[in-house]
Amino acid sequence: MKFLRRAIAALFAADDNRSGMLRRLLTEQAAAQRKWYALAAVAMVVVAATTAATALLMEFIVDAMTATDNRSIALLVAGAVAATFTIKGCANYVQSVAMSRAGNRIIANQQEELYRKLLRNGVSFFNQQESSNLLMRLTSGAAAAQQVIELIVASISRDALMLIGLLAVMIYQAPFLSIFALVVGPVAILGIRRLLGQIREIMRSEQASAAEIMKVVQETSKGIHVVK
Image (cartoon, rainbow, N blue to C red; front, side):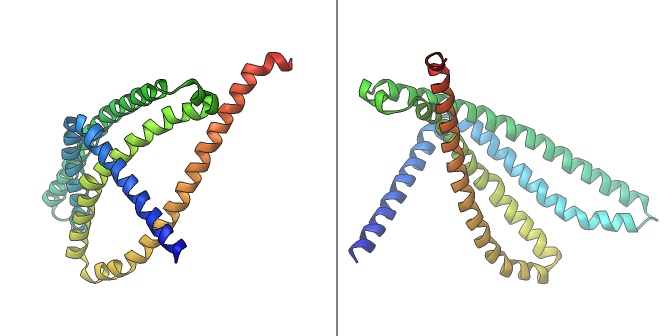
């Protein structure tokens, strides 16, 4: 029982640390780039709407291809498809530029903040820490903060609205298949979550391997004259 209580307490403590970290990232880093993220959110809404419109147009595309006697409908559908993909392409471009601008500034701010924190440490800290580990913190740590914020913004603005739009089109066009997909979908989501957990473990081991490789190369370059 004591072990169970300690495990539960550690789990909630870890969750509090993660929630506090996310809150700090959103309030400090994302809020500083709110103009770029607002522009990216608007573009993502347009991308989600045009994606749902593309799925809705498939019915009209099939009808226009089979009805060869009415060229005006075919031209109208072709124009609608071209306009939809043009708007979607422009929105994707705006989204990519805005997210890149905001992400690069967040990475620069995070690297500057981490560097200042490193300089405030004493000599004993640098004697205990390897240079490859510090380098990985400055590079991967700053990039991870940008990726977390980008994932949150994309999940809320684009993916959620895209899911709602595609579900609406799916239910409108095929109600029976939609009900079947909604029943089977949660089972597939559980499998995807398990795969994502394995991917996280692989990414952690990959970062550890990269840090070890950098360590070996640095030690080799510094000590090669002794070996020679």
